[in-house]
Length: 327
Ligand SMILES: [Zn+2]
Image (cartoon, rainbow, N blue to C red):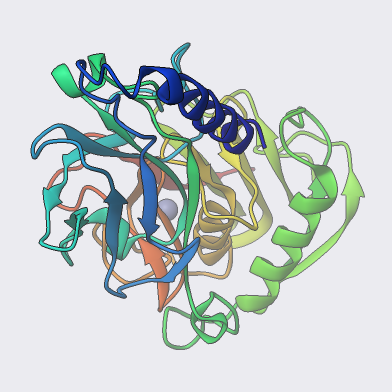
């Protein structure tokens, strides 16, 4: 625990310095390290959330930074791509704390997942402090177990399927665990009444007599996955599912990071097509059959979903279905 050790060392050093210097007592005492009073390490989605720091630093000089990842810069300050972290200046209370009461509309109250936060000093307060940047803490926003995505998706979210398909190792990305993919595909398939069979190595999205689900380099940019029905004389003779290999996939079970695509959501969607549900719902509808999905978003169940950009489709990528007539 380097931050704790560093703090203990600093206190000792201050005590040693303070003894002989006490008589002079000219310069103002440096600010003590920022002490965190809240929140606890884990809070439930929607529950009240307050960040509280105990410090004598002047009003307006203490900032709480919350990030979607634990990356820090050389000074130990949380950092990352724009939009993945937020700064909030905390407000003094009469009991010596400086707090930020998070509004109910904030992502932090609405979106389950792992977050990282710290307090830091800015301006003159930072100059006079031994540790202007506080240690990083983890905050987990949880979903009740009963609300997590599970159970059948028909008839509420569409019609039931009956087809079976193989999993393919062809073009499989090294960033996705094969066993995890198998587990997700089996679960998503059974929620639609479909069946995921054993592994094979034929290409996904190509007509070859085998219905397969897997990854492909042929899925165009801007499209996360394509489910294809190969139709001959009005009958579906093969059903394939191809996921775009060059995406930053998150295979869970944690929720995706703000720059990741949720594999479970995309499988649920594409397998929904395979089950016979061809129509799309608008982005942000409470449905697995939404037309698009953005990075960091998911739909795993009616009470287990989160969408960030519901007013614009700019960031979201589409989820496609196509019919190829053969013979
Ligand atoms: Zn679709």
